[in-house]
Structure formats: structure tokens, C-alpha cells
Image (cartoon, rainbow, N blue to C red; front, side, top):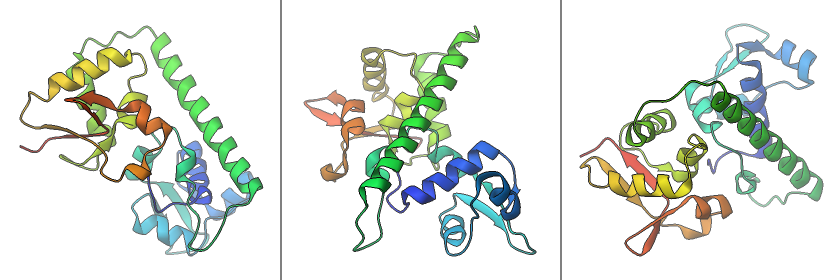
Length: 209
């Protein structure tokens, strides 16, 4: 979850993911009726979510790896950030809720299709967790919300994943910690937590000893 993006920013990232290619503002306008313009593209570039080529017009944009990682899990209502002093209208909240629900359904369909493909994953659960962590993390030792881990392992029962995560704490490079800023926790974050030693852990880090 990113605190610096508005629902409109997320919508633009979703459009770029759907296109899955470098696309010009002219094409964006023709296909989707919108353009990625200043200061939005500059903000998304600076945050590392989008790569824009502005050497000539029309400007061209593509989703960066960091943007793909951000969109690898369902969107949640808490991500709909407003500018300072601004309040979201009911229509904006409804549109954001529709976007989040549609995107989550798309991710669920993709996961179901992959599960039905008949390709058996012979890796251990520990290996699978490490693999999805590497996909979601910005680098070794970076904190990753457990929501992102669970959304990539939808075929694993929660109890089994909880047990595997707890056992992984025996490894010297694994950390599981609670979210310090509890007011940031939404329903999905609380449900994704694993209870260890009498406290709920919400974040996973792997790779630093």
C-alpha cells in the first residue's frame, strides 16, 4: 500500500498495466479518453512507478517494475488518498470502490486460471514464500505487508501459511514484525496477520542477517 498515491494515480497505473507496453498520450486519449500529463507523470516517475519518455511529443509512458509490484495485490479503500485539506465526494468514493473491486476480481480470476493450468508447483512452501517475497520487495530486507504474500499464495490455506511463516523465523535472515502505526491497518491487513508469541505480526522481511 502506498500513502502517496490518489485513486486517480492508481487508475492510471492500472491502465498502463492493462496496456502492458509503452504507450503515447495520443494513444491513451484515443483508447481510454485520458492523458498522463504534468504534474502527475512527474510524480509517478519520481516515485519509480512509471517510466516516461519526454524527449519528443507525444510523451510515452510505461509501467515500471516497482509499479507492477505495487499492483500485484488487491487495492483497498484506505489507499484512496486525498490532497491536504481535500475531502472525497461520495461519487469519487464509489468510483474508487468499483475500481478496487474490479481489480481484485481480475487478480482472483488470474490466480484461478493459473491454478487450473495443471502445472504442479513442486517447491516447498518456504521456497514459495521466499519467491513471492522477492517479487514484492524493493530489495533484500525490505518490509512487505503480509497481504501481498497471501494474495500470491491463494491456494495455500491460512493455517498452513501461518505455520510456515512461524517456522521461517528459525532462519537468521527472516523477520516478522507488527505494524507500529496501528491506525494504518485496514481490515485486509488485520486478516492477513499471523499471531506469534501473543501478538499479531503484519510485515515480513527476508534477506538481511
